[in-house]
Image (cartoon, rainbow, N blue to C red):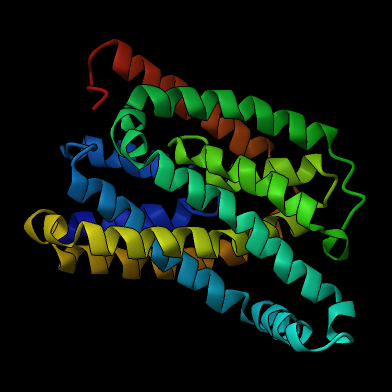
Amino acid sequence: MNIFEAVLLGAIEGVTEFLPISSTGHLTIAEKLLGYSIDDPDITAFTAIIQSGAVIATVIFLRKDLVRIIAAWFKGLFSAAGRENPDWKYGWAIILGSLPIGIIGLAFQDVIETTLRSLWFVAGALILWSGAMWFADHAATQIRHEDDVTWKDTLIIGVVQSLALIPGISRSGATMSAGLLRDLDRVTVTKLSFFLSIPALLGATVLQSVTEYDNISGGVGWVNTLVATAVSFIVGYLAVAWLLRFIAKHSYKVFIAYRIVLGGLLMVLLATNTIQPQ
């Protein structure tokens, strides 16, 4: 990998991480088009690690909300009065909702990093999950808001988030759809998706950095990995700011249409052997 490819992949990650169009799916497609073997350990690790840049951008962008929630959570640990604060319950809800993807990710890590990296899975997931997003977008009442979020909501959303381990489904698309079906408003589910991404993606970064350190050193290289992570941070920060403004006034129609077109095009390229699935 050269530095220009690292910058390109970092930019793709930053743009797509929080849009409901699947960052892993886009990175997998881009990596394949650049000539990489997409199920090689260094490539799968690189893909997971550079997501941390976009996550750090989220932490900085939502730092006031995070400080408020964390402070309320700690206060609630030592004070009965603190446990009356809605942010105490919201903090626990985020923690609980973050657990399923970690458990399932560890249990099925080998399948996720090999079989599910096939571009056929990416294409199919892009198209099929668009149907789920369309249904959620039209069925949602959006009558509930951040103060109404419960542990049951985040547990359900967290389980659905685990489906995003299949490239093409989209972690944000999965969590937003599940949240809408729980009748939460779009801004609430979008911010909740951001919060749930922090432990999930940072955990994956730590795991891959430790277990695949040598593979990255001998493959794509740590300099390229860090450059791509830095680029994903910069682009991700801009994407988060834009998405929160956009989603407050618009539905997911444009993202659904894009997913279907991209998935269909990818299937044509695969069916004609223009590109290979792995």
